[in-house]
Structure formats: structure tokens, C-alpha cells
Amino acid sequence: QVSELGLAGHILPVPGDHPASRNRFLYLGGALHRLPSGLGGLLRAVPPFSRALLWSGLRDLVTPAGTGPDESAHCFARRRFGPEVAEVAVDSLCRGVFAGDSRTLSVRSCFPALFQAERSRGSVLLGMALGHG
Picture 1 (cartoon, one colour):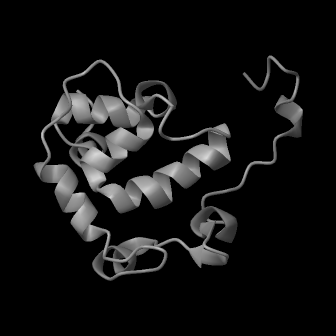
Picture 2 (cartoon, helix red, strand yellow):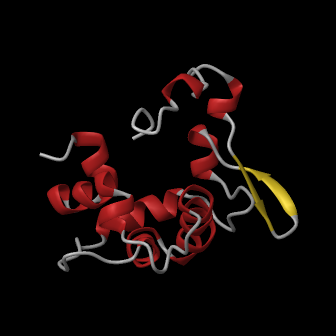
């Protein structure tokens, strides 16, 4: 897609070991929050989240897979990971990447890997860890 626009030569890739690729920030509620990375961020509450993200991961592991042909990114995240992940992380991501509202964007179109992971393994986390097939 970028090459079709003639912009391939203008991309500035960021290597995986660069601090910019490891440090993610979210501006929310008038403050800049560093998003959790590594195990520490999973085991304890790190603002802007009110509780450890481990609980959201466990929720994904025990939630049955969806059966509909598609749903909004917000509904998908809320069902799989809880309301806070949907409101804080997924909505912010959708606004930043797609300039759209997570309540109206299709999870199947915007996040096909997550959609397929859930459908193939019954869990987003298991599907991403073990592969979709």
C-alpha cells in the first residue's frame, strides 16, 4: 500500500532494540502514561490501568470464543479483556491508528490476527502464542 502511493522511500523504520520501539506512551486524562512492558506491568497495576493486566489476560483465557461473523473492536476487547482494556487501550489505539471510534470499527477488518486467534484457539492469547491453526 505504501509503495502504491510512491512513499516506500520515505519510511523511517525503527529497529526492535531502539528505545522508541520498546517504550509506548498514552496521553489520557491530561497526563502522559508509560504503558506497561514486561512482566512487571502484568503483575501490578500501572496507570492508566486500575489493576494488573494479568487479570485481563486470565479473562481472555476463560471467555468463550465469539460466534458472530464480526463485531466492533470495542465489543471484542470488552468481551475478551474487560471494559478498562477496551476503553483505555483499544479505543486509544483505534483513534491513533485509524482515526476512528473503536465502537464502530470492525475487529475482523482492523485486527484480523486477533479475530483469527480467538476463532482458531478460543482465546486471543493462546491463538497468538500457539498460532492460528
